[in-house]
Image (cartoon, rainbow, N blue to C red; front, side):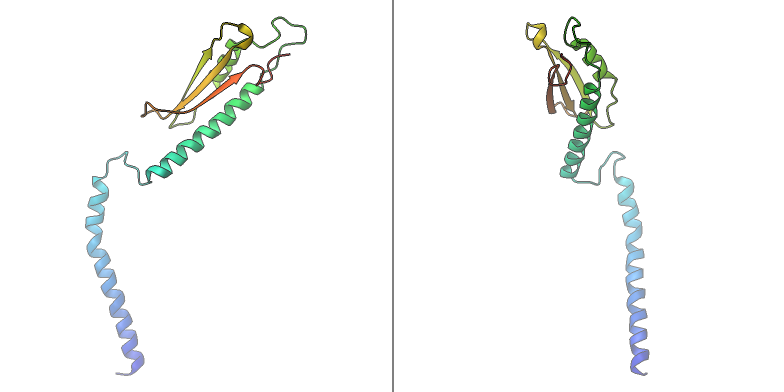
Length: 144
């Protein structure tokens, strides 16, 4: 045999061996994938946490934009601020992305002038609060 024939034959032999080894492992790989639970995640916990934080931040920005879009009361109107219940109602109409939950509660300070809302974000399967934000009417531009 010539050198070229030997090289071509060894290349073909190597490719055939690697293909047969891959095909031999294929049934066990298929079985392993069938044994994974349907809700098993192939991503690491850190990637899941980062994705969750990204969803929360996007939801926070969308919520804040909607709350800031509420028209403030007319000058000279009484009360001079948008009622806190109107702000809460608007917050509850903003959609929440899948994979997180949002809770909006009224913070009462004893004075109607200092009322605010607290927004908390959680993962539905966790009891731990992941993020909290407090919005005041003045901070949202809802007072004249």
